[in-house]
Image (tube, rainbow, N blue to C red; front, side, top):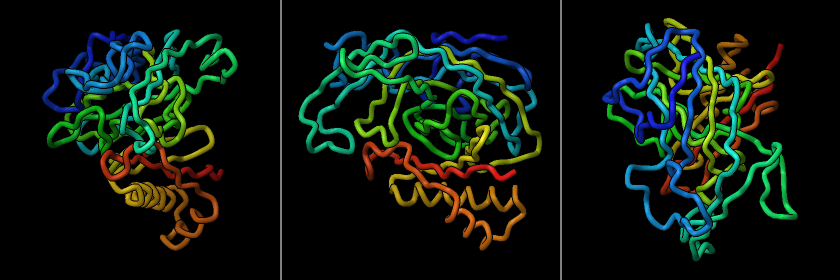
Length: 293
């Protein structure tokens, strides 16, 4: 197994970045990741009242996959997400879905013990680890790791977790995969714009589907297919995810559009992943369809 440390990070997914490591398809890689603020938030006194000087949501990488070419699909099987012992939650003044009510900056360091989030002495709940940022380099201009798009990026989709396989488009030679922004827990919507941000060690197996193109990321769990969408307009983000699911059902189940449309309306859920600043920050959405044997 190969390893990347959290000293090998980027703040954009971009073809100009030199590879941090080169692998063959089928190899397993352990990536040490920073939290969304690159390890700079260490106490309740460290507030998010200023931007990080290099950017938000650093991604470990990029990983160059030998043989990956535009028109292929990169598959990333998430084998394990090992969390650090402590992460942070925060409120940013005038930020998030309830921005009008958020009038100050607040940070709370949150311990992780025996698989539990210790929010306070009286409130604790199980961790739900997930990867916020996972994506490949786009063919055109690079995209900051704080943004989402057809290449992946900051999707903040809680289905991107242990046991899931993520399918990503290959837009440039080598794909140039980056992974980061792990959350110990994050509710759908991430309404403050801050999940339970935490450093982690992520183990993935990376393979390649030659000559099989995908237009944007999609996911497979043991029981579901999940498609993704993103846009400044929440309705359009949901529409993109739904359109992607319709196409997947047509391919996988040999259905007409009308059949897939009806089946999806009866069986699929269209959900919001991230809606922390609608109209000003990308909303990300997903469509979830329980697999049919």
